[in-house]
Image 1 (cartoon, rainbow, N blue to C red):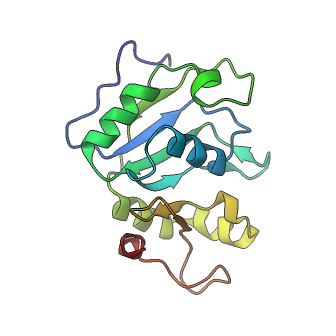
Image 2 (spheres, rainbow, N blue to C red):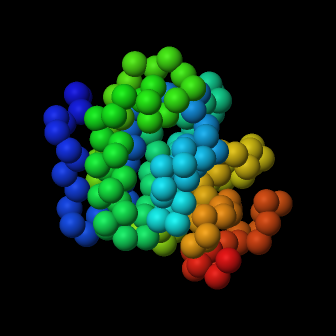
Length: 164
């Protein structure tokens, strides 16, 4: 489906957005760096970019949770309908970014949903830290979300990131 014309229309309560049409070779860390450059370092508290395990690249979309609906709206205004070559530079993709409301809202809800997911077990088993979802402290430092009792480390409760 083609992206909706005009600005993204997110509900006033929305804090979790889905960014679509990300170039497939773009990495989670590249997206984080770009969001920090664009002034979202202190606004973002969760990011997950699903990965195609077979092709070892992202699936073209990411889920981002912001600390406030205002930050999410600002993100949508900046990224919706933006040329990916300008917003997500480094690749010759002709894609146009699209921002929509995510079905699952809030950092804690997203983390809990992932922790209970079979995909999380695969991510941890593959031992690819760069593919794991992350939560952010108020200072913008990220910590991978991992399943309890794994080699990746202790279980991460969503509220831990706020204390950093």
